[in-house]
Image (cartoon, rainbow, N blue to C red):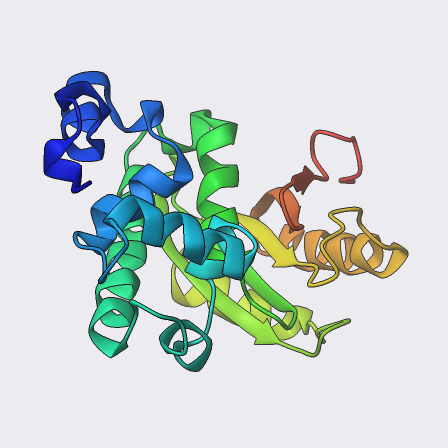
Length: 225
């Protein structure tokens, strides 16, 4: 039976419009993205099949082009469309962070950092540079490393802070292992960065560690000096 033959309140598009996107299952959301099914499968059937093959929505969203396109019903055009959707989501979060109230909402900051760092298979050390009212100037990846570490150079960080005329900074890096617990080396480099930036009167507001589904705040756990 085609989706157009379903009761109106069961059709994914109409359900989204009437009840909101949160009311839809992963398969229904994916079906709206797919738009059409294939021979013998509705868009919802195809979506369920793909979620099973990818073992969930997130692996599908984070798949490489080759991994994505090898599955039935998908191809380069759909991959490009998906990347555009994901990038729009990231840019929306970035725009929210640029609002004056952005950094008064910790959960919003966490979601932004998850969107930027969670999917990267190697360690990345980044920073949110802020003005004297704690508004975002720019988010930038500073150092890239391997799957289990990245070298961080305080002198280079200080140069970046001065180049942006930042008054405060929030650091963040990901743990590709998926665990958001900070290591002893994470604590040591954070304290070195704090000491270096104190010399130029710049505050370190926090250092977030991004795991698989969690973001750890060193400030909230009293780990900043």
